[in-house]
Amino acid sequence: MSASIALVDDDRNILSSLSIALIAEGFVTRLYSDGHAAFKALSDNPPDLVVCDIKMPNLDGIELLRRLREKNDLPFIFLTSKTDELDEALGFAMGADDYIAKPFSQRLLIARIRALLRRADLSRRPPEEDGEAEALPEAFARGRLLMDPARHRVQWNGSDVALTVTEFMILEALAQRPGIVKTRNQLMDAAYQDDIYVDDRTIDSHIKRLRRKFRENAPDFNAIETLYGAGYRFNEE
Image 1 (cartoon, helix red, strand yellow):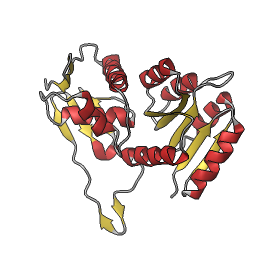
Image 2 (cartoon, rainbow, N blue to C red):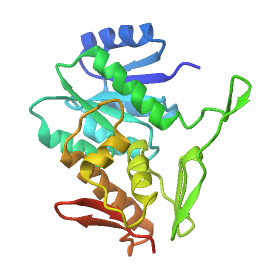
Image 3 (cartoon, rainbow, N blue to C red):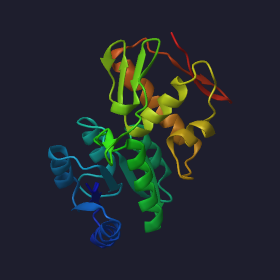
Image 4 (cartoon, rainbow, N blue to C red):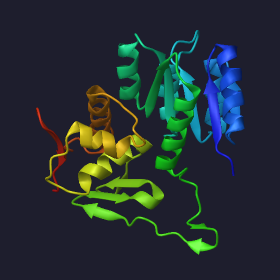
């Protein structure tokens, strides 16, 4: 089944050109030029991935992402201008998975969409393809943490913690080797494949959001440790 991509932008020319390019690549597109309409539609029927402009009237991309994150953790890519660094940082803090700066190459955006969908594995792909059983990654436990990559499931002390694809990949990279320091570059490589570049503040924003999510149910959570000047590590309790 073709992946469904929701495009949200008040510039109808961008919506039209992106939709044509994505359809040519085999995707199904859903177009929204208004944030309020997008929120209602995406809440009732989530797509596989959202590409959204930040600067929109009435309901901007940041607020749309905040509201959607209260309901689900679907993959989310922001479109932003090169000068909107504050918006980029805020977007990552709210749980965006990636961003593309305008003006952008459609080929680059499509590559990032494919990479993010692969990382998400669509979370709905059946465990068998072409009639052969697929080897699924095994669940593992690290102290009070339980991670099940095949089901994109995380638990802490028996309680589920909902993570975005990027947050899951970063946590998995840390938890696979407790006590080992991972640099920001190593975490970027784990979470952003296919030569996608992001800067240091992106990883820092994702780490802050990870901690906040765990502390909503476990205020004493301190398993992700910052080593200033070096990176991060997971401490198995």
